[in-house]
Length: 149
Image 1 (tube, rainbow, N blue to C red):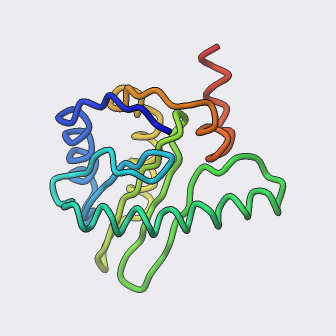
Image 2 (cartoon, rainbow, N blue to C red; image 1 turned 180 degrees about the vertical axis):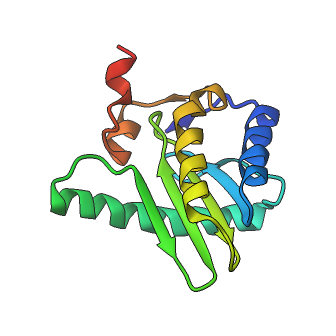
């Protein structure tokens, strides 16, 4: 179970800035390890957050299965390329999950990949949450927990 203390304004503002920085970015959502929406950019309503939560849960499960099969360490990111959009799903060291959608014919996927990596690296500023011990095992080892000991 996750106990969260998230400053909504801080997280929403950070997600809005992430979406604003990349041409074609449509929304960003942060989910807890158990799939609950912790926050979203200004474009995210409750129904969208619920739908994204379900999609991300399935994709994370597939990603975790791939990491076990390939014996390649913890899951860090899943990218889904569709004909008119990309969905970036990135694990954050504290166990939360960032999801960003970018769409359009002239989008710069590399710019979004960079911004997602930057957000993940700085996420602890916007996500002051405490997770139970099982949550880090759910997502995989990113190595971040070793730096904080």
